[in-house]
Image (tube, rainbow, N blue to C red; front, side):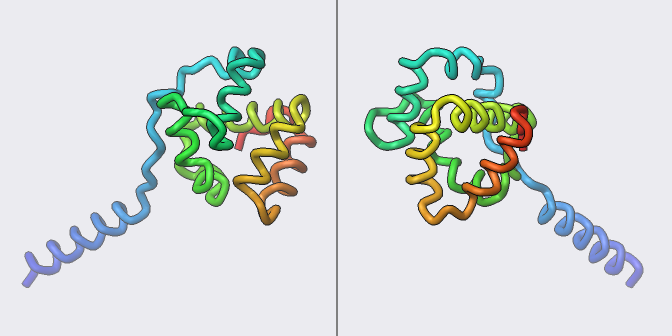
Length: 131
């Protein structure tokens, strides 16, 4: 009887822990130079065209495109710390310097404006917005 109780308790603890564990997106792109991309119009436009389905995507562009909707919905819950910093930097840069790209992306990934206000307010209040 005592053994059964311990096994049940151990399994309960294990499953509770497993259910709460949040996996993260792949970190294989966490060391990219986001500033180099943002400051190179040709490369930046290529990423925008990928995300907007106007051009073929690189492997990292494909990965990014796949996770944008979920990341927006969950406020980047599965993002690594580096990805949160990158997202904040990119959103700030686009909103403040490339408003046309910002509007295009939001038109596709946030057509109902569900996230627009929240991200725009946070970005304008803090240019280093990162979460």
